Length: 129
Image 1 (tube, rainbow, N blue to C red):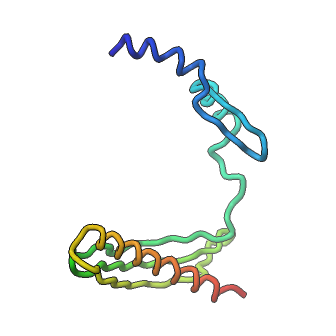
Image 2 (image 1 turned 60 degrees about the horizontal axis):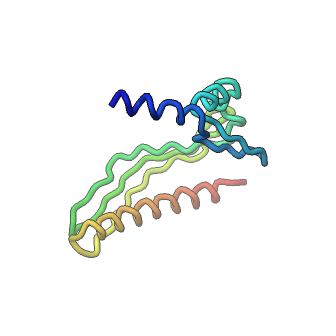
């Protein structure tokens, strides 16, 4: 194991392992040069603050095979500048599964999440001036 680590240490620090394209500029880095670039470029900071933020508190997201999937959530959208809530809502979505397979259960979960997404988007659009 130690011999493998020693053998692979040199290629990992000589050959590029990451490729970054930012604003048309491309850069490749080894492990060490990537860490140095990341630290020096302040890449962990956001370049801007979003105007609004969405928060979702899932209260329930479960169900039964051959039964229904239940999604219950509280969600709100806030104005980032002043932390004012623009929208506060509660969603309760029930989607029946088509049969008792895991595929049908996952499909019902997907449909429930899709309905929640649509509900949030429509509420946001309706709240716009």
